[in-house]
Length: 308
Image (cartoon, rainbow, N blue to C red; front, side, top):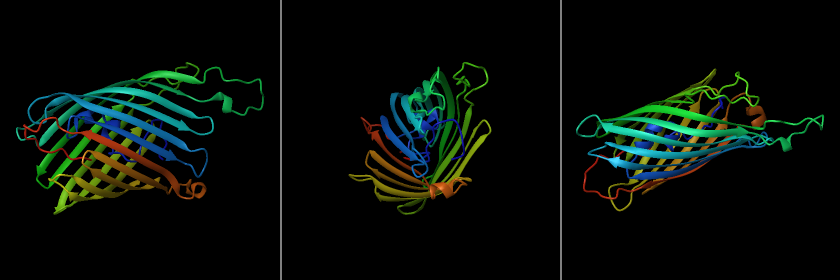
C-alpha cells in the first residue's frame, strides 16, 4: 500500500461511514450494521490484520431525505511480529438535508470524535541485551474528524455521490516518550462514485478516490459492473464485480452481492509494487458483511438511495 499512518480498506465503499462521517445518513432504511476484515502481507511475514465494526441509526427524519443520524465504529489493527497496532472507538453525528422538493439532491455534514490506543507487545521483542526494556509500550490519544457529502440524481438512469473528509483534525501527539515531535498527521480524503444504468438491468459504476496524509499519497480509480437480478418484487438481489488500481501499488478485484437487506463483499489485492518479488504478487484479502434495517413504515414515498 501507499504508506500511511491510518487504518484503511481497499473496499472503500462497502461501508462508507468508515471513510467520511457525513455518510452516516446515506442509506435506505432506519439504520445499518457492518463488519469488515482485512488480512495483508501473509506471504511475506506475520500478516497485518485489520477489523472494523460500525453501526448507524436515524434519530430523526423529516420529509424526503431530511434527518439526523448517529453512528459508532471500532477499529483494531494488528501488524508484524511485535503485534504493533491501534485500537480506536468513534462516535459520529450527521445532518443531511434535501436541496430540492423531489429529494434528488442531498447535502450531508458530519462530525466525529473518538479515542485511540496504539502500542506493541514488548514481550515479543528479541533484544541483544536482556536488561533492556521498553518503558512506554502504549500511547493514548483523542481523534477528531469532519466531512461533507453530496448526492444528486441527474436522471432516472444516472446518479452520483461525492464526499470530502478530514481525519485527525487535532493532529494528536503519538510519541511514546511524550515528546513534541511525533504527530498523527491529518488525512484528507476525496471520494466519488457514480452509477449509470446503461441497459435494462445492467449498470456501470465508475470510482475515484484520493487520500493525502503528510507526505503520503493514495490514488484509487476504476469501476464496477452491476447486475440487478431481482428488483421491485419480493426480493431485491444484485451482483457486482469491479476492478480498480491503487496507483503504484496494487490491482483490486472486488465482488459484492446484495440480497434484500444484506451486502456481502470480498476483495483481493494483487500486489504490483516493488515488494511483489517477495510477496509473490499476494497483497491482501478482505471480506465484509453489512446489514441494513428496513423502513418501519412505507407511508411516505421516498426516492431510493443507491446502495454502494
